[in-house]
Image (cartoon, rainbow, N blue to C red; front, side):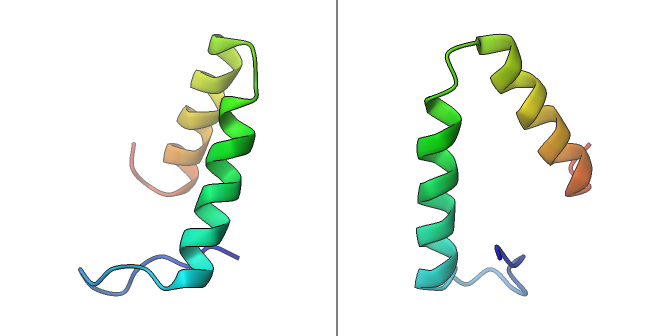
Length: 49
């Protein structure tokens, strides 16, 4: 589970590993629109939008 950072410190190795797996999977999606939609969904879920 990717945990939000509690301060400005670098994320722990377990979070970096999970982020790497997510990025690998994200870029394997061939449809650019689907990737954009997924990014928008994640931003909304994380409160970034």
